Amino acid sequence: MLIVLATSPRVAPGLLSSAAWQALRSAAVVLAPAGHPQLPALDEAGIAYRIVDAPGQEADAPGQEAAGQDGTAVWLAEPGDEPVVPPGAKLLRGSADLPGAHLIDLVATMDRLRRECPWDARQTHQSLAPHLLEEPYEALDALEAGDQEAFREELGDVLLQVAFHARIAAERDDGYDIDGVADGIVAKLVRRHPHVFADVPVSGADEVRRNWDDIKKQEKRERAERAEATGAAADPPSVLDGVPFGQPALALAAQLQHRAERAGIPGDLARLDGHPEDNDGGPRGSSSGSAGSDGDSGDGDAGDGDAGDIGRDLFRLVARARAAGRDPEAELRAAARRYRDLVRAWERS
Image (tube, rainbow, N blue to C red; front, side, top):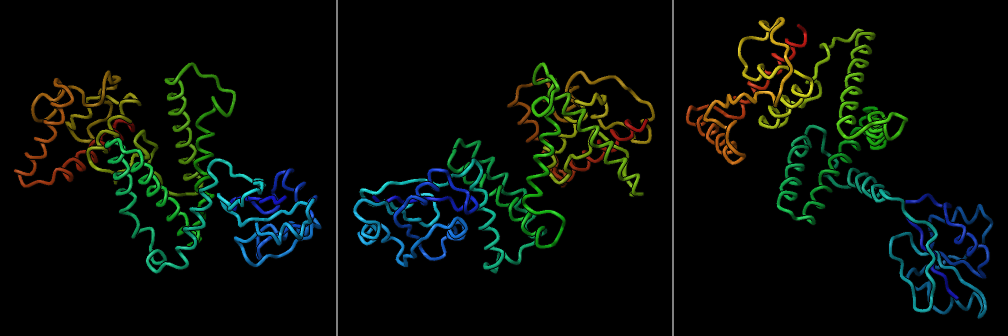
């Protein structure tokens, strides 16, 4: 009988199932292509093998003849997902991937591209920066279109950016690599989910969110304390810390207001009245709705209409800005910066 022993290229050599080791030890003959990654493990285990220099012919009669009519021959197929199994042969999987193991293929592919592709080799963090925005937008387009196959492909492009930047960081000795990136996000998720990874009870999703916010505040305080201990200049912690100002202006304005609302910042500040230095103890009432939800839309009554009306009014505001010779993106970004300053002035007070 011929056994085709399949192994995963993503599992360290020698980490085989008990059934695989039993088959190797009891086989009349073990056949393998030259350079198979399992060969050093066979040497260490004292298992003899015969090198077959013609991969793809492992199922031919010579292999079975070597084992004898009543013996068993084991062929170590090249590592991969779908080995060739000849008629009458038995497939035995000696190692299998854990979920996520195919990410190892991405890391290996990225390493090779950096070594062998002239274009990939010359890329830097800065040259790739535009793709950090472009690829997520393309993924969002596919999601909104309901095309799951396209969405899967675009998610791959997003994942590529992570692998690419991590590979560059490893080359530059920036202090991290792809494993450091993964370790960081795992540590953050564990830290911010004590109801899953520790013994903190929660009553529902709302309490999960409150705990998440409290943990983030504590992290900010600890960062500020470390900065102070090392003499590094640092701004006082703010609820707006971590909001990326590089995102599109509309998304930026929405995220700033959302953060402020959740922290109880007065909604009045969203009107952008007054100057940051004037807010030395202004209204401290808690916002009863989204920041800026008082209907001050600037053009029409967007706050009183449905979603279509709001979109129409936003579109008209863009037209107004263009008609006035102003860049709507730049104008909204400037307003977002002003709002940030007002919120921080309120926090200091």
